[in-house]
Structures are given as C-alpha cells and as structure tokens.
Image (cartoon, rainbow, N blue to C red):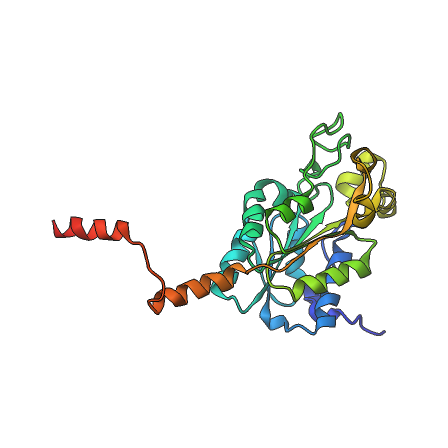
Length: 290
C-alpha cells in the first residue's frame, strides 16, 4: 500500500491520535504539513508550540522540536523561543479557550508587538478537552456543559480583536475550505510578523451532541449555512451580518517586526550608538559609595 505523502512529517509511533471521531484537528494538521511541504521548509528550523486543550496535542504528533505548555501560555513560551532564536520559525497551535480566555493577554500583546509567530487558532466553539464548557467563542443560545439553559454571553470575534491589536496577517476559514486554508498558511509562513489564522472546526463530542449536531457533517453544514466571505460582509448591514460566520483574509500588511527591532536596539547599545538612561543604576552607585 502506498504511504501517505505527509507521513514523513509524523511521529508514526504515536499514531493513531487521541482525537475524537469527526474532530477537525486532523484536517488542520494535514493542511499545515502540506503548506510546509509545498514551501519546502526545513523542519529542523521550525519549533511547534501547543497549549492546553485538544489543539495543544497536535505538536506531539509532528516529527520536529515542540513544546507542550501550560494553559494560556503558548504564546508566552513562543515569544521566549523567538527572542532567543530569531532564526527559527515558531508555529503555535492554540484553541479558542486557550488563547481567547486565560491566554487573551498574551494574544493581544503578541499581536501588538508584532512578534514573528505563526498562530493557528482552532475554534471548536467550546472547551472540548475538559468536558465541553462554553468558551469565549461559543454562539449565543448554544448549549454546553456549563450553559445548560443556553449561552447568554456575547462572544469574541478573535480575528477582529487580533487585527485591531496589530497583527500583520489575519484570516479565518472553516475546515471545509482546505485549499484556502493552505493558501493562508503559506502566506503566513513566509511573512515577517505576527500572523493569526483561525480555523472553525467541528467538535461532535463536546459541542455537537449537546446542540443536536452529533456528527462532523452536521457541524460543517451548520458552519457553511452561516458562512459569508468578508468581501460580501463589507456590503451588508449590521442586522444582515448578525449570526453569520465571516471568513477570508481580514488583514495583510507590512510592519516592523519585534525581534528585528529588538536585536537592532541591542546592537546599537553595544556599539554606543544609543544613549542609555540609567537613573536607577546611578542611584545604586551613590548608595554603595555612601
């Protein structure tokens, strides 16, 4: 039997994965590997980082250096890697709960700094791994383990949030739009700066079965019935867009990247080209002399 062309990137001894039947993580992992393969990127120059949640387990199946971090801290660890080794590409797998709730501060400031991290947010509309509680992206009215009467909280549009915070590339797709997803991943992987791609993904176990959508097909149909491309969405009123799932590329711009500016600053200080303000050190020296 002919081997799958992407198997060369996987830790085969860890297969099969722990993901539930119908989960979209496998589709997303395949898209990421295909983007890497089509760009012919060197896997020895890539570090994968995962947080807590179903999405955080993905790096463990990839035959490359990876970190499994604490809840909400994937971008904090990724920032440390990138600052210490700016020559490496850092790819983060995170979820709507991991990055939109406990890790929200790290998400906003990573985008504000425009640090060169490629962030893939798998949005399955709930906390899938921990039992199906509602998350910051759970739709209003949806039933979850912690919203048995229906969710009444408003939800974050994470793409709009990250774009306004300062990211240079932001896009959203569903798992059904695989070619568009691969296209966006390839753009993000060669772009300098903070890139954020949200992928709306089915979670039959945690979200679907509580909302009369027990299969992956049910959930994908639910997504597709609500999909509106951003070009069309811009021509729609607020009333028309309410309840719709806007997909496409939200922003694609060029800005100075944080690591490059940081190391440029350090080199300038070392060469004496940049004045350094040291009032606390001057005060300490005076205290020591006294």
